[in-house]
Image 1 (cartoon, rainbow, N blue to C red):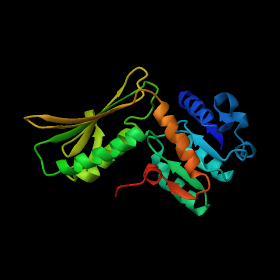
Image 2: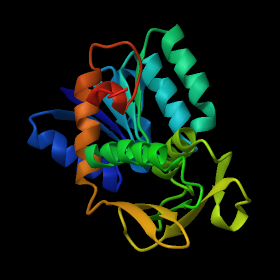
Image 3: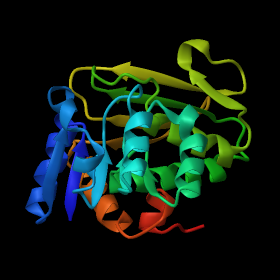
Length: 240
């Protein structure tokens, strides 16, 4: 598979390393220093694009991939107010788009564990749920896309919460999220249910970026030849 890397920071370099080790080719690498190479003609040389940039640039990058008729895997978070617009454009123009807030297989299993725990905790009003996330200091959105996915999964399955909010703004009936930014932490997410008697906690801790990069490359290979809007449940299969 020939890959265009849109975003060549730490994640882009990790994706390149994984892709090359699996026998794929990286035919285009775009960052601030090579933005002049980001053309439709160059994109067309790729079988798939993998996009990890910033919330401010992601939408235009995805649209350029659609214009080039190149399947695009996006891992950028913080732009999801445009998700329905992008999804509709993808379908209307017969393109291929894959989005996940997190490409780690372990995190996606954690999403399911979080939803299951929320369902079984629903009858026990004495337990109050909360969430904490820790990411590196370069992470711009707070909470992260992973944190929002966890929060939405918990709220949907728990049924006794109306919304989520950052801890300092959370009101009664909202899931409080403590969002920390420390050093170079790849990502740690903690879900707690606390009562007057005890506490139930589940944690996912990423050791490095390798798991995210592997998942993105797997998603790109899976997306080639398909049309439509997809996510990790499509790739991994859903138990629902």
